[in-house]
Length: 266
Image (cartoon, rainbow, N blue to C red; front, side):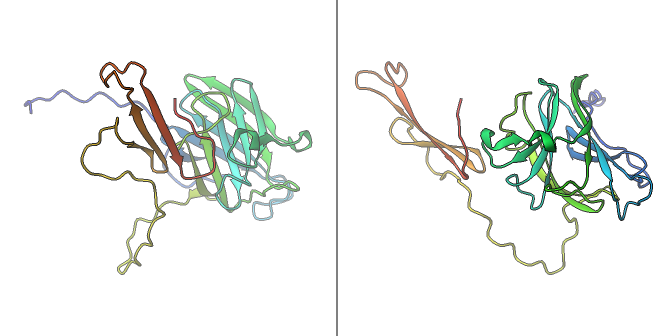
C-alpha cells in the first residue's frame, strides 16, 4: 500500500431522501426511497371541511423519479401480489400516465382501465437530465377500486429497462408497506430475539448440482440464471467434425422457470 494513496473518486450520486425532523405529509411532500435509483414522493391533499383521519374527498399527489429512461409504475394492492392489483403506469415514449388493471403477468393481462375510471389529474411524464419523472394526483377512495388510506397501505413498485411497457425484470419490482400519514415504511427488523424460532424450510429453488466438470457435448450442462430461472443446454456435434470446428453443430436448450409466464433467452 503506498504511503500516500490517491483519494477515491466521488461515487455517482444516487437518490437519497433528506433526513431530519418528521414531516407532515399533508403539508409537504414526503419521500420514500424504493431502491437506490427509484424515489417516490407523495403528499396527501385534505380538502376543507374534513381532516386526515376522516379524509372525505382526499386525493394523493405522487411523483416517481427513476434514474434512467424507462416506463415507471406504482400499484395499489391488498396482498402485495401483482395479480389483482391496480397500477398507475407512465410511458415516456407515448407521453401517457394512466390507470391499469393488473390481471396477470403476461403483457395482454396488463390493460388500461376503462375511460370512465381514468380519473387521474395533473398527470405528466418526462425524461430530464437522465431521469424519468412521472407525476399524478389520484382520488384516494374511488368506487370499485382499491382504497388508499392515510394509514398503512400495501403498494408495489416497478420499472422497465426501456420506455416500452413489458416485463420489468427480476430485480426491478417489489411490494412495500407505507404509512402515508407518518411517511414510515416497513423495514426488516434489526433486532434478533433472544430465543428466535427456527426458520421454516424455504421454498425449493432450482439449483444445479455441483460436482466434476461436465462435457457439455455429451450431457446437459446447467446455468442458474436467477434463483427461479434455470438454463440447461447441450452442444450436439455431428459425426465428421469436432467441437472446435463445429461444422453443422446444433444446441439443445431447456429453460425452466418457477412460475407460469412466458420465458426467453436471447
